[in-house]
Length: 597
Ligand code: HEM
Image (cartoon, rainbow, N blue to C red):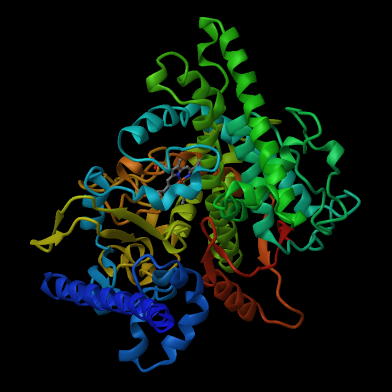
């Protein structure tokens, strides 16, 4: 009897392993065969599709595989995290072309860097959907416009889309102006608050931290009508001179909680930890022994409490609005609350409102901050380009009366700054992949051939390779696809938008309109970025404010030549990894130096 029991005990693991090995091999064979039968090329990979372990460990494991002979280890370059970024110079376009299958155990994944295919995928919203399971973690505070599909998404988009209007853009302009002025002051003042002598301005060691602070503060006021105070009067010491907690805005207040701004900052800074904690069973969370995690959870509870209070206040204000006030305040939450009064089945619940505000902040602040940081470093590396930007800013100010400040009406004049933003986004997109999914079998047409896509396939748009494709971006030898050339976007006044192209900033005249699907930093079509103009206005105001009287310059190590400092800065720009958005791993030190010094 005992012998039988031990035999069964020994054979169970063997059966389990055998079953998995067999399923792996069958699936690998099936999808390899599928890849070979498709009219587009394929690459075989050997890790299971959607493997979290591969995603997590690949940055460390990849060097081992990539050191093996090409036929043995090359495939790993196609599964490592942010792979298209790492091989952006010449891969995978020359090897596989602009449409190919990545096949392996667990499924097939179609990768596109063809503008035509991208445009087809982005227009056919019912055929190429979001795989909702991938977005579950974003529902911490409530389902939202990013994490939903179909009719639910339509309801969310109908209410969350209209608040991003001209009135909100004007509010973004004003709020950014105020934040950017404080930011500049902190970049150019001594510790005692006096203006630094020209050429002796403090070193900005951590530009990312400050651009993140700015975008978080702007989104706090433009989406919630809560004004945040700039936290440092001088970056000469980023810690000693922070505004203390009593001076920080605390409205709305709740008993014994963190001030709003602190809980808001904590939630956004620790969002990845929160997402991980949120997936644990709630019983475990209640008894989590580590104080650090408990504090993060506490600030999350406080944030939620404030949001409910805020929505209550907004509702009361809107109820009290007369018909004449119907335009009301321009912050996003006011518009969402206003859009949710009336027909219950077409409106958002309080939980969904909070879910959407959270997602606006999440989707909007790191993407914009990383773009600003990258553009400022690029300008520091390219003084001639900086001169062009400053010329434009000077021309805007030349047309102003004494005492007049920048106004939203000046935004269309910021054409060179917009070209700078679009070119930065082309070469350094914060979102490197647009993932879609097929629920039923689909087809796309590529080079006059029909490509069958089975149900349950992942279909991914490779933003990096599309933005560097020689088909769309080799305009001239000085504007080759890998060259940072904002001038490629500045077209003559005779320019007419060609058919089948997209206008990336209708507020600015005569900007290049790329072929549809060739520039997708903000995605496009039905699920295109809701905050595109929000981010564009914000970017322009920050650059116009920082560079009016100052130039941004690189700060090298002692004895280092400028060329060496530039080479290092460009190297640092290349070294990035996906957080919420793609961001730099390291730091580049800069300084804002008074003009002419
Ligand atoms: C430079 C800054 C930004 C970039 C590059 C960017 C990029 C993108 C991209 C690529 C998508 C599509 C993602 C996908 O389909 O997987 C997207 C969607 C979205 N973005 Fe942005 N974004 C930026 C700023 C913002 C801002 C400031 C906000 C809000 C204040 C925002 C809110 C959203 C929302 C709500 C969606 C989802 C739309 C939907 O699914 O219907 N974004 N963004």
